[in-house]
Length: 56
Length: 388
Image (cartoon, rainbow over all chains, first blue to last red; front, side):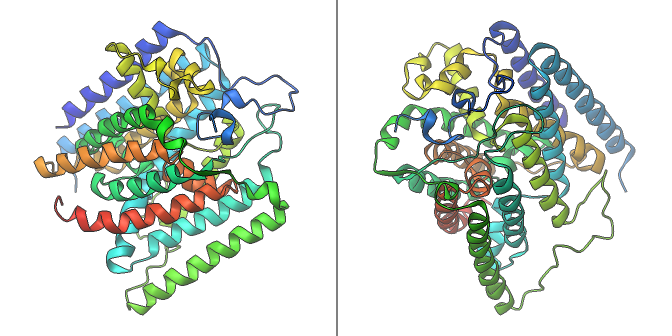
């Protein structure tokens, strides 16, 4: 059972790394301008950062 | 006493967990940036803390609902109290790690949150874990929770498909206490509410004359590396790591956005035009869908939690314990996982992103989430008996 478990999570991690290789990082959501005093709302996942990321 | 096979298996999984962690550290640092590395390491810390302290919301709520045993619920309230103090002081100020403001988890209060949190509370009793619970138990070798996690992802995807419908229903908008009150007032107001709840549930517990376990008691076999931790260690470490998450990522700890993203990536890969769905056209989700999945901080912390739990369970010997799995449990995982994912999308997060981080951030939607998820859990506990 535990071997099956290790195979499953290895497949999962491998898929993440393959996606990373294929897509690349075109935008780093944790990038902020040094010295910037404003909130970078685009950086925040939906549900974090209030309604900036929602249509309402 | 563990057998030699168990010891060997634990060593294999421990080495596996450490090696994979090192690979991710290298990839994140070399191809994205140092802050993603910090988020990943914080995730590992969260995974170890959740596993060693066995800190879950699902079982704790169930114990209180069924037996009036309040030790876990009281631990969660102490965690919220500590987090409220720390987060209220630091939110909207500049991070120690980067030179910009940190923001809280503030989301709207509306029909979608009420319905979503109720569904989530109901479903977590069937699925056997909440947002964080599903991750750390799946990471510690529980195959049934992997089923729950898979359907959690599927439910999040479907939730994102229906997101537009739910968010067009009546809503009061985002209400942050920090916008209406000073930091001191916000802390006092929230601590007052937490204290009332603490006294109320303690009174119910004592009334049942249950052995009132002291959450600060050290267990005779408590060990920082091998576990098992007393609840209070879990409380302090979760607040500490959530605070570090705020400093490193610029926002508090969150779990379920990543599940929807993983589902959307899979759906895109098999030919669905997910990018045309309104949710995936919002500013951050659209970027996250186009980007590498590892660029998303919630994904990075979730991977850290899975690996942290794997390492912790290997250190404690728990990985070698065979978990019981049968058709009924799988069905519970399928239904529970799907509904949790769907509910979390509607409710702007799970017990972590909405309840823990939301309340800590002074957002009223966190309290609404807490109330309706607990009501959902009361119903869920009754349905759980058909599966467990």
